[in-house]
Length: 384
Image (cartoon, rainbow, N blue to C red; front, top):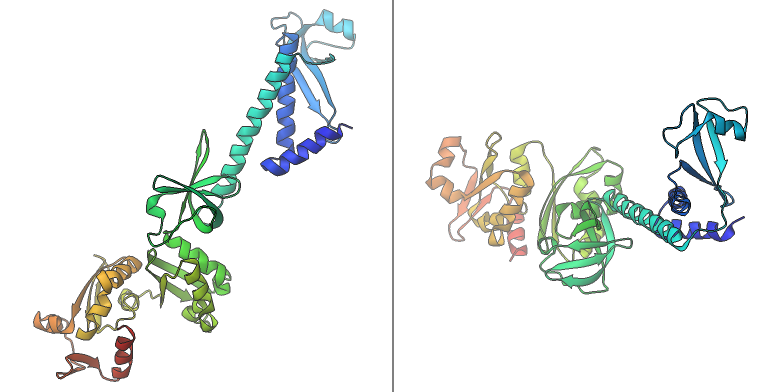
């Protein structure tokens, strides 16, 4: 038994992640090449390697014909009868090829054939491995900065994280381990080109899928995610079980689940809201924590007018307009936010037949919906 060869095949199979059968086929192909170079003939040479012992046999196959037109592929009936009188026209004559060793050139050519085949299969294996993990989270090690891009080792291959896929508030140091999302994998002559991201909204989605059992089970679904990487994320969720609160499931006991995701994102704030098929209700939820008086949504134009109490206008818009931007991304609606005073002055309330259920406290300059005074005050104080 050719034990050394079999042991080498086992090592290659593990290290290169290439199947044993592919390696054996590469060796068989290289032996055919070496044999043709050695003999100097273009015969129909065949090689068979025993998968159990590692032994191989070389032979040629020739078709029996009346008149030979291709000496490398055919043998005359007369010559075939010299081997065995049983052969007839159309039969295949098999002849073993024996020689002690290959020449240096033939051996080198055989080696090159094997190496080329192994390189091709290794590239294919790496491509298949990471292509199947597109939009999945994978852990890598930061290697170095290449201009404004970052090279990350994923184990079997290196990936690139472009500048626009990096979170501005994060500091990427060489040798640090980092979790990234495989954005795309392209097959190139030099091997797979892998692009990873830390800014894609699906990164947040995948973290929650890993943390929340109800999402894995299909009880809770993440319907939409809007993100400004490094700062804030809004995520809309829905439950298909009346007994399960989707927001509570994502937050977890004492916030353990959402805090685990926040830690993975370097402290990025996450707002989780209830999804609704009613566009007006969804927009109202998306503008949380701001309270809304009314929402006028145009489903055809994908536009919405939102009216909020005066003292909630800045909260609804958010710092540098972030809350409104994220709400627009989450709902896919163009949102125009107006204060209650502005709505009264422009006559919007008259147009929609608004009933005045709000009272104002002129001394404070704030508006409260009856029954919600304490809630508004506490939220406003919490955002100061």
